[in-house]
Structures are given as C-alpha cells and as structure tokens.
Image (cartoon, rainbow, N blue to C red):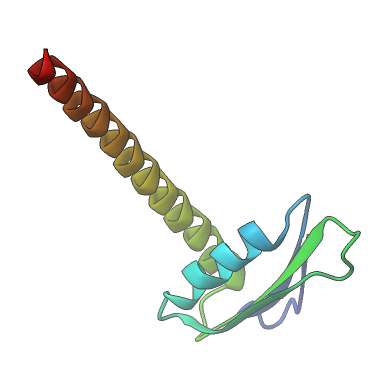
Length: 104
C-alpha cells in the first residue's frame, strides 16, 4: 500500500505486509545507492506486526518507480550472490574430489 501525496509523487511511504528487517534493510541499502534518492528509511510499526513501512523521497522522479527499480536491482544482486555461492560450492566439491583421488 502506498501512502503519499497525489500532487507530489516524489515522496511516498510504502507499507509492505509479511516483511521484516531482512527485506527492509536490504531495500534501504539498495535505494540509498540510487542517485535519485534523497532520503530512504524504514520502520516497523510494532514487533508483533509483520509489516514494514519504507519511506522514499527522490529528486523528482516518482517514488513508486524508484522503488520498483530498487526491487529489480535487489533481485539482480540476490541472483548474483546465489550464482557466486553455487559456483563456490561446486568448485569446492571438485577440489575435494581431486584431493581424495590423489591420496589413493
């Protein structure tokens, strides 16, 4: 859900259900890397409420579009981390197999 002014779309607060600090802090980090963002922060209204509020203020671009771009960027970052991790596991298993074969 988006809370913001209809006249100034560069400032909005987005309320996201079923999210916590993990996602919110990752989004905050990703948003703050964007030069269009002048302010970004998040809050969790109550510890037992599984909801985060993310505030985005931009240099003029619609906050909704900047948030959407940040979600896409975060997805790409996660895909890169996953593929790097999977490759490291594969390389480790291959090197372990070679060491075992060498000892025979």
